[in-house]
Image (tube, rainbow, N blue to C red; front, side, top):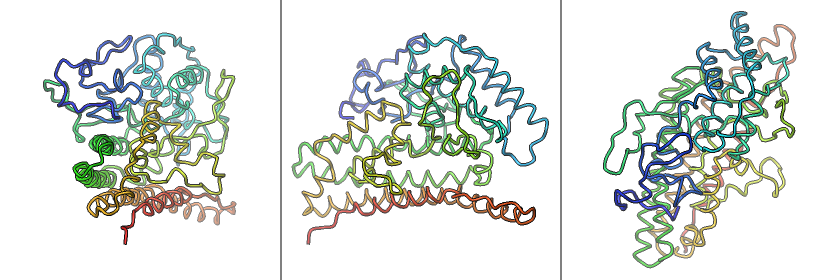
Length: 464
């Protein structure tokens, strides 16, 4: 983070302003590219943060066109979830016909693909979408045998990207967007896309609800760019530590609190475009991971010697932005023990980092090694009431953001799950079946409340 420079401080011919070069793709139009050169390890852009500076590739080159056409066929056929109530014979046949086509695909060569990060990202996106279409159109009584045409290249690509071979937040959000209208260009290149100028490249359900669900996170990422810049400025001032630096840090922390409040507003605005019942019944089931498979089936990657084990689905917990706020403010969430898990084992928050792009994991590690943490500085400067208030305001804003997250989980998962259980209980009493049990997300809420409460405890009390 400390190696980035604000765009307005760089001359137009600065090397950081040169177009991105990428093998097989060529120069990409754009602006400051911090995923190469100075900030190669982090892939954090000064205008788009953890999102790429330019819209991700929307199609692979011709040699991998069979993957793209398979995904096109799935979306154009409007394949339906196997768990959809009232699934018709025609819908079942359509799904099986598509799966048979996927099974007959050849294993495409990947040597040239692995030369390009941009191609690898698109390939991971396409193949994980195909895999999830394949798995969740299968009848629940069928074993999950992912055909070699998908499993072999997906595992190889995932190894190159250092990501699990499953749908992730980066597939749904970070590398799944485009602009609705052309972006404005100035002397430094293209401006960052406005939060109302985004659309998703691919969805499972074809609904605007699914697109709005993804875009809510994308908008949060874009609004969070200023928060990342404030972190950088604060860290610079921490090394000075004089009275002027304290005044500046106070202002930066106050501004950070207001930005996190904006993130909360954007998060809650998802209710305007995404219906909870549509999400729970028609969207969420598509991106369940193996650990959430409704029939608890083992996912077998055919043709792969060492079977993958990290197969959780996408989650907002895989966003490096929120983790960065935790690390920067010194919120001790990652030391929480989850459900009796031993302290030396991975907690949920730590495990989510496995599903982040490797550059973003590097960024978080870099941020965590800051020799002058802001929380330590505030604790040592408690006598400055304004600094203390600013820091506590930032902490409280993160706590309120987590309150909003819990509210969204309650609306989109807990309430629909409760209605589903009520209906299941009624049917079970009628036909004499055993009543199905399920948490319906309550374990998640319990965990989120624990994280929220730990955040609240991070408030620094003034010296008496």
